[in-house]
Image (cartoon, rainbow, N blue to C red; front, side, top):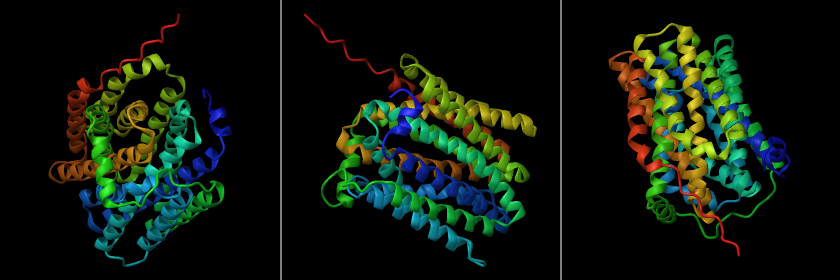
Length: 394
């Protein structure tokens, strides 16, 4: 597979694409609405950041208890059920007078369940597409995330202002229900990828097997930590520029879309591994300008440039796939997704805590510097993988 047309011609890719994109749209408008609602009620940058990205922390619990189910549940039922549960939970968060603590309890439960979503989705993608088409297919899904987030954050900002945060949450709930319908009626019924009952013990055993490989550990850490810290910077957009948070989030999505398009479709194979380290540094370095409290146009430019660096994740995911046995693909990508989202929650909490004591702009620069340091530390373990020697013919 070499073109996007070939990817969309694969059976079931289009309904998976619609399910994923609609769920991202729901999450985008809902997180902006809830973050705004919490910040309005509490005035706390920390709680606002946690409202937007804190549920990711709960994925640590799900990743250590539920993740074996990613390969042991029917994919169609799992994806539809997760989207339905998110729709109901998001609608409940819109109830007037709901205490802030109750909203966070719901976020904790939803975050635990979401730990299965990435594993089921990307494990199913590896079944829908041939192995050589996985990177291109993942690139398409990532591009849809960027496109939907650009529209979703821009629309969410308008809805929060003209409608209300609670009304926007109800729109998010309706989008989750639409995603559930796309999964239920668009995907074919498939058997689970692995036999046996999911259990906490099996989750721990397979996680330990995945983590036991030193090359995989470096890939996981590079996927989780630098990315999660920069999402911590993004979690401060609301307290940094309350009137322009939607614009900054949309610009971040625009940069991510551009990076994924260029890397997934146009970068030749021989360049991919060489570009990994520069892209990971690009993800963080532009945020250092926030130490100078830049004007809005300069802040927007820094955000767009930095977000191009998110495409480094595509290259790392391709490397992870090459290092993982097929029977563990669902759990491997579930661990990658859950660990990434959990680190995003850690990044949001850390950034919010620093912002509480300094300022949102200073906190973004500090967190970006930490991301650069982590990237440089991990670089020796992510040197290009040796390619197999060509077969000798006689």
